Length: 517
Image 1 (cartoon, one colour):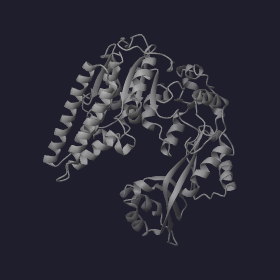
Image 2: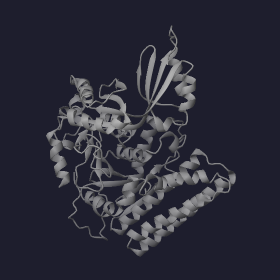
Image 3: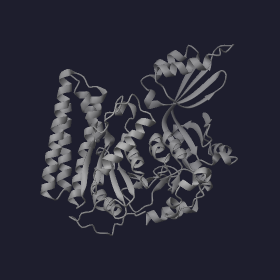
Image 4: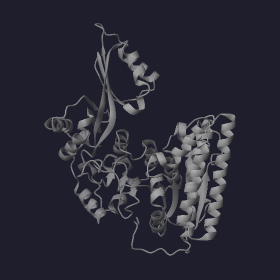
């Protein structure tokens, strides 16, 4: 596996393309990476992989300094404003996006012919976006499909710039707009649909020949609309399905962090980089507060034996974190799981020593307690509670129940608009109280279920720090133990648990030091 070398010099105007006999690597770049590290991506990272790999690039829409200033957020805002009578904000947004992308193009593209073609392309697409919004303004309607088209313009503009910059650096690239890639009718999104997408994406990439494809993360006319059915993780999913279709060696997700850590390094000074982690562990960490990669996206590549590597655009030479199934628990498929993924990076294959693996905190939680006021509890007590929550679209993160009492941890931000109404209805079944400013602490580890005393150690560590626990929950998979603590104690709880319970594998120290170098 080749990593980037900052000392190497790339000479522009030299044709560097994909070679048919080389293995595929699919690289996905997020909005912040494309927004802040465009020159590093085109000058350093991509060229360093082309010598020994065939590379596919998938890009998100450009992001600004904050998510609110990102292209996708502004496009969604434009779609809303187009339906407001008398508003011209949507037209202002299109003008701003046009100027922003033009400025970036002029900042990075040196070849005037390439720049002129890019400017014409950007201007044409932004004019089309403006006309689309004006049409929506007239008919006073934006369908889910129309909203998809509006949002998809962000990836179109971003990928056009990336493809042009690669050409400017001497890399023969090709911009691919996947907006109309789906050429069959599907009723719903099932595995058959995703298998079709993987095959279709592979065909589109292969048709590029020796050119480096730059694919829009936004793809096709998805049944039910892309935003509604898949959500904002569609760019990761596009990259994953491309990797599946091409039988790629690896899928790279480029971020602004070195990989996945034993805890959030911004909150825990002694947090260590994990060289390898299982998909099950990542899924738990993602659900309980860590922004990693959507579990469904992981499933698509992991099920066919393709590892995912989280990499840092600010430290391209770092090994990152590899997401791959636990080899020690997958004896039947060991022959198909390439041990070289670990060996080539000096990692230990015995991941069972990492028990537990990581700890995370999910803030902005509220606890909803319902206690039955009936002497003879109805068998419908729990059913009535969950029916009420379902009617108001309230999702429960954690739950602890008895015959007469239910305690639930909820995402306060997501239930803010419906919680008061739900509380009034729940009061029909018992006394209700709400505790705000809480946090969920989750200890995650694939091998915790085979280690005695982990839960006891967790609660002892918190008790010794005088941190009280409101709810305790252990997942059925036994790879996650979670509890709810007061939000004011969340940071201390995170550090205490990390300090006392997480076992550091020597290989992690080794790779952390090498990354720092």
